[in-house]
Length: 310
Image (cartoon, rainbow, N blue to C red; front, side):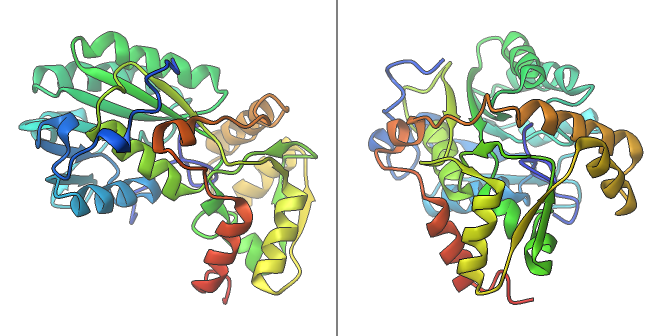
């Protein structure tokens, strides 16, 4: 999955690992050498990863267009008629697809975006994808196949740590019970700041064309272990409550998620949380030259910023 309200999706509704993989930030200039100082379109620019990418590019002095459904730069994944206007005059784009890169229609949308990007003269695209998701890979390849001469870099992410303070798991932490269909599977939770730093390195630095980066945190935790660390940081008991996929789908529907989407998410979690994504990688370090942020550090920072004072 890429980044949805429950895992890794940039929602702006109101909001090959080659040996060149370590040459990101170290070869980046203040103006962004990799895009020749050109403008960067950030799709879903008000989403969880999108806004962080916008902040970092702006700090580097790179001109940015922050795309969203209702922002100054209109961009809607459900309305391809506006894509060319958003892309025209840019040299690079960060793509965080909504509703999900593994969802029906995503491959077709990626192919259409790739054709539009090439026609508009875009030189580089960095795509947010999900780790260990076969259907997301189909969408990745659709983008590569349609983008022609555009350089495409894929950033596959583990579950975001910020799901616990910015996403759908926030209410569970506040209520003391995180309900999720993960069983005893461990996940190498990844901090959003690390995702954004890698994306910006790939957008502005050299040596990333054609790369596929699989990003994880430095260690894997079960959801029960994560809940324990969250509770210690928040100063209140937090426990993990495992449920089956069908039960979770029913819970989502009770909270207003349409039945088809609830079923899709439950099925996807069953695919992702079978243990094949438990191992960590060193791709954050290879790109940025530093270790990724540990989950404990994330929890302490979030608690210090008042994330769970509600």
